[in-house]
Image (tube, rainbow, N blue to C red):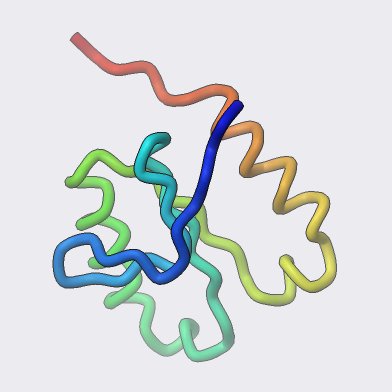
Length: 86
């Protein structure tokens, strides 16, 4: 597949937790503080999408307790990119 990710990658005024530039994929890992900043997270997600990125969000506990599921979801997105509309 050949995908690679950058950690803490700047996209405009935001810093993505993980970003695959080639695949136009941002992965955000959210802790409990994100429960109180939903509006800010939505703004970030919309900004990344406006720049052509697909955004995956996972809770920290998902990564810690179900890393296989996180990897499977990430691979599913990488193997089946969204169709570009003409």
